[in-house]
Image 1 (cartoon, helix red, strand yellow):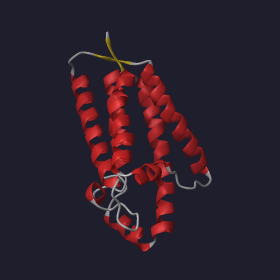
Image 2 (tube, one colour; image 1 turned 135 degrees about the horizontal axis):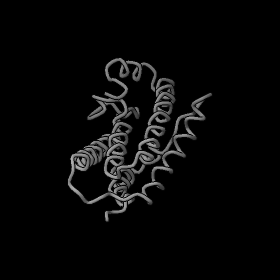
Image 3 (cartoon, helix red, strand yellow; image 1 turned 180 degrees about the vertical axis):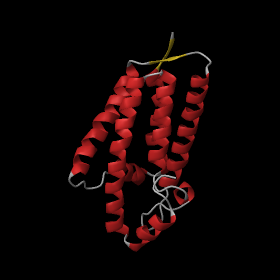
Image 4 (cartoon, helix red, strand yellow; image 1 turned 180 degrees about the horizontal axis):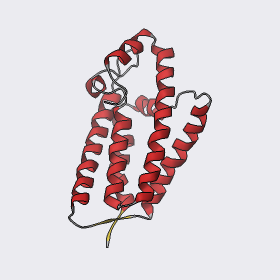
Length: 175
């Protein structure tokens, strides 16, 4: 007996959408906007969307055993770190510089802390549900997210020019 895996998504949704909406309604629109995709990025965009939905749907059918094990402890730690990183990322995303570029707060250490938080968070869900199928779907999601990030970077270069180019030189894509 255990807890339904989908329940683990509630704090994520509250942070990702609720907190961001409370902080800055315009930021919700910015976060939901995907950059124009070219070539293989278009495929990656659809793989990203489908894998994201698949992760959420899969969690409806997975349970989290209520037990104490190293895997469970690692899962709960990762879950907490993922949610904390997502919270910090959302807070800093909600308040960009006047030109619209996010370079402050946690964005001084990673150009994509929100994507990084998703990866940590979703990996922890794999540990907690003990699902290799979910792990596979998370890997598909993450690889496709990399292509989306590359499209975002191209868009940022076109939009912010040298400001973003300098930011790229100072801050790594992930860590």
